[in-house]
Image (tube, rainbow, N blue to C red; front, side):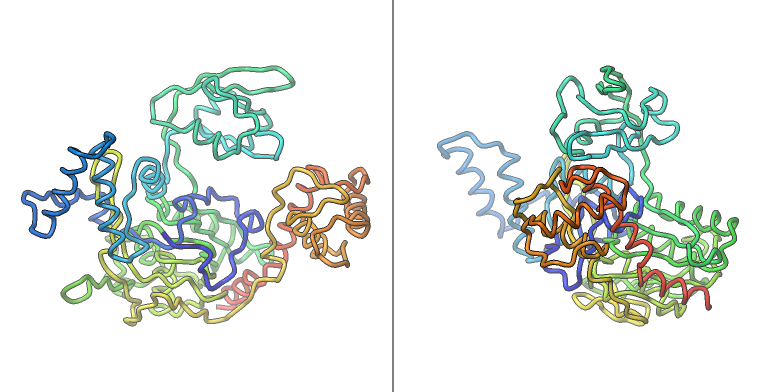
Length: 480
């Protein structure tokens, strides 16, 4: 998996972007992967004989099983051997996925999971039901927004993170789960049957700048993404959009088929989308066609937003629209991942993700470790990289990175003019009081949970309002 710390470009915190998607979909934050169509989830090759080169591996396995001073599961040794072979490739994208990692990738690619259809908000003190999807077990059981989550199957989740609670709630479709909530100081335990939940990978809205431009944000590419993109275009057309911005910032990639379908929708039939170059032979060229897009076409002017975390399948889509249709790319240099993976099933609980090819842009460029260069480069505002405040409260005399983050937020919002040194001194206290006064909060000078939440919300709103990349893209799309 890619190491996020090695990115060339800044990474904008998800809390600041506030796109309102089930984003974390991208394999738990995995950057840059494209899973090849057709061969996805095919069975791994069955070996009927042991090659000479593997005789020593088999001998080592047998020796350990017979002589090691402790019992070792055969599956543990086998997985170790597989991981070793994949590691020898020196390819961060090829790896063994077992149990939870396998389930994470599978649910990411399908954008589905077994659950109850409710999202959970972690306030720092409580886990609250934040939203409920229609026609889901949570809706039918009359869960309500604001209910406090107390336990799952009798095990307390008080003090746990939202991700820990979600992991307990999710499970196999058709199985039962008991959720204990607190509503108006009354405890209630509700039993629900987990159902197949499909997450949204696409969000859409008319631009606040001009109602003639529709903005479509794609968080990742999964099985339902192409259909969700088509529905977004139809909805925005009805609302008056005559051009579109496709926002791929922070999109780590995903299922290649979805990216191909969306590219085909936006290109004339016969135009090249991507070239897939395997180890031998000529490149396989994918072109726009009714087979890929079902006859649905986007003929309106387009602009595409990219940044340093736009990778793999999102780069394939961006390059296709740019080189085959002249669609402008706005933002920052993309990640630069020009390889394609195939997922091969080993068992019910294990699979390998293996790099099987490299992909080239329509013009034959390999952008691996280089990325796509925007047509128009636009930087994020300096405050866009401020980290979220993880503490539930801060007080005078505290000294920490969270205090520094708060000082940076207060500075960006115009309340703090001191040194952002991470020390909660009198200047910081005065700035907190000024912010509390402006927000109608009690002016204590203490940064309690409500103050911190409001601070982060205000900075997110400021970014949504400022967003120089989006403004540039909307302007370009609207002029086409």
